Length: 323
Ligand code: AHR
Image 1: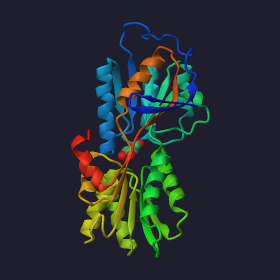
Image 2 (image 1 turned 45 degrees about the vertical axis):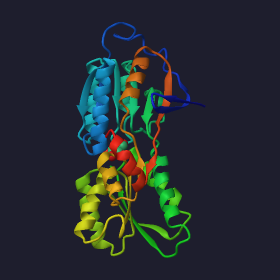
Image 3 (image 1 turned 90 degrees about the horizontal axis):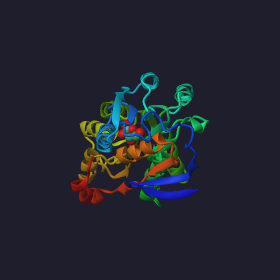
């Protein structure tokens, strides 16, 4: 396995052979503009908005013609986006899959049309990994583990039940599945740490608020909220305050992303810990697009480098935060 840092991201894995099966393409190797079809999940969160901006800005800077489509959170829209890109004979297709399963047929259509596909941000569960050239993005399980490790440490040596409520991301999405798994693995050694309620808030602020309202009504003692992203955590904070409780004190809050709004709440002590998930994938995507268009070999898995933040660290980081 090779490990390399590429463009601020960490590239890991054995090399994926993608050389050869795309000829120099209609544009590859020549002076014509590369045409990239990109199907985005939607605009459900601050993270997603920053990700879209990163992709658009990087395409422009790289001189790549971007055909951008917003799937509004629907897999059927993404499938039809991809089919549209195939019909238009774009050079490369990239997309951030809203859910993990159900992609094999359309990915095979792209492969048969000799159009390389790059996954960004989220994984698919296809067994045939030759259906895509590379997957650029975070390790969501590690993110869940970081959240669980922080909590396990926070309650180390303490007695008494700790009631945790969990706001999950979009059902069936890679980040929702992996952040839940990673977190559960890290807290299971301490039987006092109990996830008493878990429900999706679809990565949206408004849903985070309404689901937290129902949690507060049904569960008299909530000690911890684990939200799979900042936006849901921020919505939940509104519900907690409306219920007369103090976020960050009466209920400890852990979120994922570290977008500016989340970091602001962290610096103010309303969130206790944030695990970072970087949306700035655009530059790396364009590098990989150029390579696959030329038929070059690329890393099969390109991992994003990211950290974690406490309230004190958030205060220092906020002035430099790019998203
Ligand atoms: O796939 C990344 C996740 O999707 C982000 O954590 C969340 O905010 C977004 O909507």
